[in-house]
Length: 203
Image 1 (cartoon, rainbow, N blue to C red):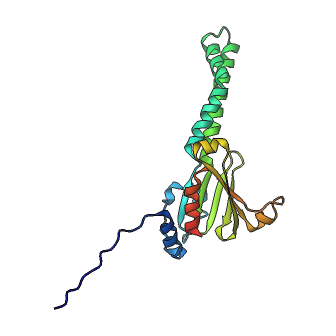
Image 2: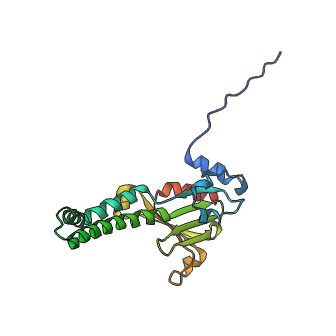
């Protein structure tokens, strides 16, 4: 009587490179959507087609937001202190108004920093790169992934300290006509590893 033996299976490899290889072997329609669309702002969500899968969607790093707020409030500390002193030691309505105006200016600056960060949003789908930025003049850049010819990862000394990068995707037009422009899409203050993982999955 012959006995059948089964070869033990090895545990799945969770290495990043094997993840890239397995995902690249699949067609775009089989790639699992990694980010829920509810996280994406409505005006960007309306640009995403039904057959596109969202692989990356996020604002710039919150660390940058906190750093900008700290820097802004540090520079405006004399203005804040002066405004508080004017309010509590006001001898006239003019002193009171000056103190309130100073504190209002500080609050508006912090509000502008927070809203600018919130309005900046980056998305990578299985077929396109999307970047939104701007406070008063909001702009959205969209570039097909198939047109990306060059990727540059830049790291300033502050970004290096925070382990962040600026990733620029240059399309065919943007590569050969840098002065005239093109549709180059830039993701600022992001983790390049996460962005590149999503891009490699899409491409």
